[in-house]
Amino acid sequence: MELQRNFFIFAFLFVSFLLWQEWQSQSLKKNKTNETTNSRVYLNYKKEKKNQIIIKNDVLRLVVNMYGGDIEEASLLDYKDKLNSPNHFKLLETKSDFVYQAQSGLIGKDGPDSSMNNIRPLYSAKKNFFELRNNQKELRVPITFVGKNGITYIKNFILKSGRYDVHIEYDIDNSSNKNLELNIFGQLKQTIKLPKNRDIYSGNFALQTFRGAAYSSSDFKYEKYKFDNIANNKHLNITTNDGWIAMLQQYFVVAWIPQTNIGSNIIYTSYLDNGTAIIGYKSSLINIPSNSKYIIKSKLWVGPEKQEEMAAVAPNLDLTVDYGWLWFLSQPLFKLLSIIYNIIGNWGFSIILITFIMKGVTYPLTKAQYTSMAKMRELQPKINELKKNFGHDKQQMSREMMALYKKEKINPLGGCLPIFIQMPIFLSLYYMLIGSVELRHAPFLFWIKDLSDQDPYYVLPIVMGLTMFFIQRTSSNSISDPFQQKIMNFMPVVFTVFFLWFPSGLVLYYIVSNLVTIIQQKFILSNFKKK
Image (cartoon, rainbow, N blue to C red; front, side):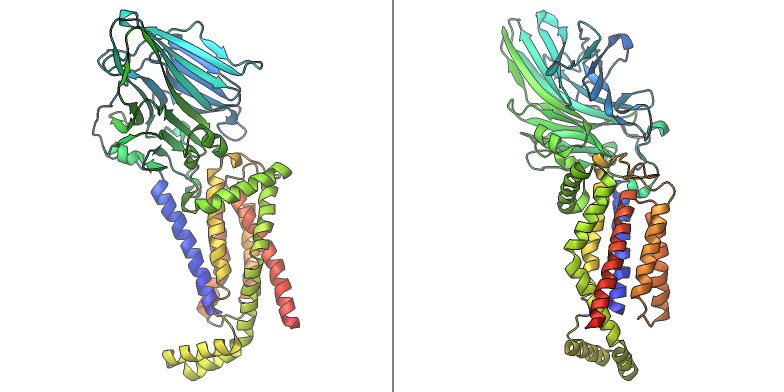
């Protein structure tokens, strides 16, 4: 019985360590360097409202700067910036104290965005507002720049209904008598230090996730790259035939997906002395013969981390939904939870139902646990006798204990396995709840308006502590050591405090799990006594 308690304590410490380690590795850190590096492409931009256009479909509202055609603001129309807020969530934004932009252009010898120029090319459009109508399949917005020698560059923004992927196409009409040599680039730049009014974290260590850069290449399906590495001039320089580059934060992602049939691309990072991090790609050299036309394509995902939609846009883009090292459990759990939600229509009740399913699946282990505990309880007088007779000789005591277990056909560790089964399920649900945008601002009942956030009144953690205390009182009466008894009595208090900051959906899962455990415990032990 003492071995089981020790394992329970170890399980708690192990979970605490993993969560602390995750917080340490992913929490925001202050920039510690003032070193400057030059970007690989031209970065200057002008923000003038008269040189902006707005492009809108039913889920996106984009503000495009006509200098270069960069997207300097993106609002997600199906998401609020905060719970019960009237304002839409702004994923891209350009302000004096914070910049987050999706830039793209044509550089190289004949590229209009070449750093040899003083300013970005100023495109023109027929009007300054474009909106996808209900009867349209897609919205195509062309902006035009006529360069030297009469070369025409048309940058097309293509949006479809309900889609967060924006297609960018360059139509180049080389009407000159010379061949053109240029490269296409796409990059994301973001101020590392968040202003107070845009802090995406609540200060709750249990709800923080990774914020930084990421990429996919021919050699790596998915790699995160910290802002700290970029700020400390540890830059990427990767040649790849496919892949994408992205910037991540909780629930949302912006990613450039380059065209792959025009040669290889270079993935790079850069850092500006104003505290801005950059990740981007640059294509290999593109040759456009004289008196010919050429089309270059790329895609930009700017929206929520919706796994199925992102997987359809680019291979491995769905991996940006970061479920941590237990992704192989979190992903199927989320799929099962989604199926249940599509039937029930409430994420809270879906969590309750999935708890019943998980407890049903693990019932044989739970039965083995409490049967083993009951047998150990019956065996306690004999164990005390052995301690009395052989307490002075630990080796002999161990031999006698093992002989007793063998004689009574008891596995002293039989009650520990369910704990180790429960731990990864618990952690995978934790990662799922803080990483799945579908659960962002998802209400349950009454005061629980967001299952991905902590309980504002701490009711659920207290109820969880009470259920845990009841389980402890009904299963720990065989502990003879006073010190261990005090530890076990104190465990519900520790867990309650710990759960104050956890997502309310996870606490809900644990409450229902404890209630089912209490019922199963009564049933198993009553049947054992009858035998």
